[in-house]
Length: 293
Image (cartoon, rainbow, N blue to C red; front, side, top):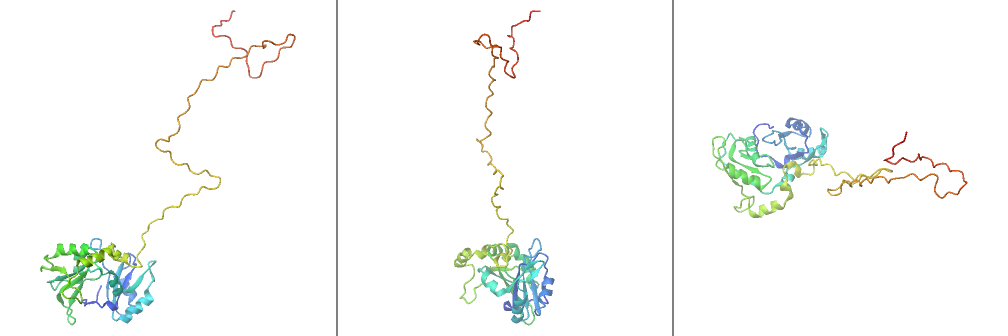
């Protein structure tokens, strides 16, 4: 969302806004931050496939004083229940820049920042709005631009795929940009790649994960070990493959209990017969006994 052609962004007057809810729009950001001062441009990079923003955006003010005031009054306010983080974009840029900066030449005058972003964001995360160099008086493109990727993997892929491809009826040239304050040295050197590989910031998938306001992944902690309640038996561990329930013991036939002869042999003569013990019936007849009727 911009007012007219976008000139080269004033990084000192631009703030980074992170931790944004999915429902936040560029219009809402504009209406929110215009309360701090005149807003020149609002940009929320969007995913090329889903067309949803990635949780962060940039707001450019007319002056650096307005940007500083916005940081003071807007930092950590809540939008849709989420506290937003507001910082200077230049400070984030220094922390994020790993050197994966490419130069795009022979641009058609009709190519704008949105078209460049939509085209090159397919190769990886772009840290800020592509910078098309424009005439400060007319705002017309000078025919070249710069794009800053978050990783060398993305910049390498962009160069391999887009160098010599047509964009608005012109074949563009894509190469690594020259370093500032250097004698003809380009980005993408082995030293830069080594430093980028050691920088954990360059390993993130999305820019908003690189800042302190990054949403913490909703990972549930491991459940604590369950302590049995008083009087409850602790759960037994499941039996192993060889610790199955023990097989039942073989059932032995009950012992043969023969009733004693009555009266017992050897009882003294003259004594009255003793009653049989309880639960004892009369003696069973032998199996081959046949009654004589």
